[in-house]
Image (tube, rainbow, N blue to C red; front, side, top):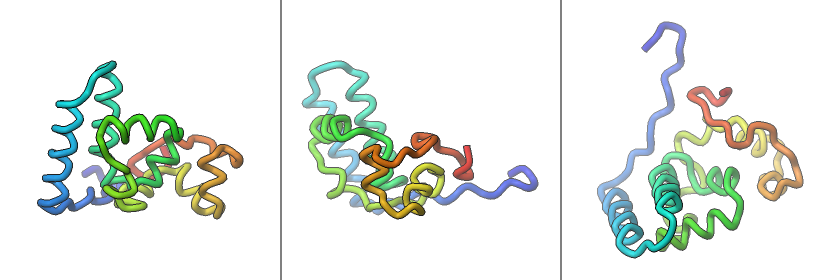
Length: 126
């Protein structure tokens, strides 16, 4: 690690059961998917990030329709699979700002504008 750099937060420590669940969900999605392959790819990306960032950050950066589409592709409800926040949630400057403001759902809906809401950096500032 370079001198003066803060170490990145730890990734989620998944249990063997959680890892097995991810593989099962992934196989289900791939086996049953019909449509544009980029949608499957994006849904699988959300699946793999979920434990690291939590469902609230996923909801924060995607609109409801997108979340529903990915949940349908994966055959899951993200709130049932992921914790509210994950160990990498603080890397989202926009999410942390929305949380600080205190009305997360207004920020999600767009009633409160958050600049850089989709930005994600090693230190939360990129």
